[in-house]
Length: 442
Ligand code: GUN
Ligand code: FE
Image 1 (cartoon, rainbow, N blue to C red):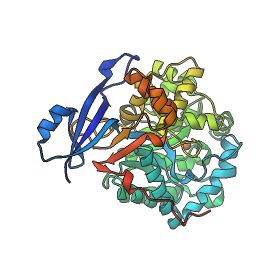
Image 2: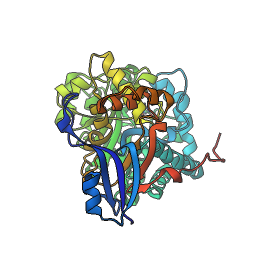
Image 3: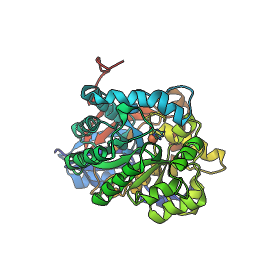
Image 4: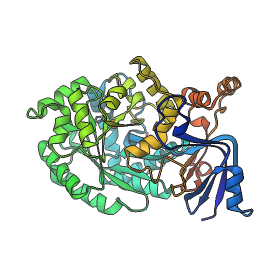
């Protein structure tokens, strides 16, 4: 693949910022460059240094004065809910039954699944997101559509077939045996193919019988290199229902612990109404709690207590949770994250926000050697951000005096309009975006 030298204001993190002034947490090159060769970062630094290394024949993509960042990472969302964003008026269980379990039935149709999967990937890219962890529907066809669309774009994507064998419409239920067999088949087909990673996905305790949880345990034991994703402690009615279905468990978290589902590769959506004991179990098992601010506000679920996760030493990540989440944009997501934490008297610095969307989420996935940074050897997944993309931003930026302030403007006022370009494994992707599809199902 041809080499390219990407020039702009380069920002990449080396660790989590400890305070607003922690300049040791990141590297920033005002006139910087990233040299890409064979889909990977070959060098990063000041333009003068990197250009000298690259030689005179290299092609230059000049993105000045825009920011050059690692591609953004979304650690929890639902691809079959792309057309269910903004479903009105309900909290979690009613919302699932009224809207989501109707919408997801459409993904039995491979053509529909393929169409939405393509649009889903393009929407992620439009928003500067180059890697995401997604739930597919219960239908194996939806997983094929998902990984095919990712492969066509060469994106590093993580996903899996939802398993659910109760408390859902007949058309969306599998059985413990079927969930096991289909998941095994899909792991064999997709996991490790190109940039694909599989996530074993029992939807949540409410929609899986103890027999299906046993099957999930077996899948995890047989495939320790796969991710595991499920939902935990999002809504009070959900918690009461889940714990009533597993009366022997100490609490909601203990349900997953009893079935061996908590480990370093486990991502647990929401984790809002958690006791200290539960958060400590996540800390002991290294499982990751996933903060989904737009979703938690939209469904009226509650506020994620990041400081208690930090105090008890539990890992956490951040995500959109589309379609309960209301935007594909990680910038808009961090805007809401700031507000959710603010309501609880917690601070989220702009540097910490940008760390979370990039290296922080990569570390939560144990993929920091490949994505989330711009260091030599990393995959060249890169987002180019324009802090002046909207007229109101341009005005606001005229009086901004620091990088921290610029990042805060981007997060607070920005959206997909601020993503000037996105590179996947070194390839620019914006111009290849599809126009509106003409044959979308209603
Ligand atoms: N809990 C179980 N399934 C879902 C889902 O699809 N979205 C959200 N937000 N929570 C869930
Ligand atoms: Fe979710």
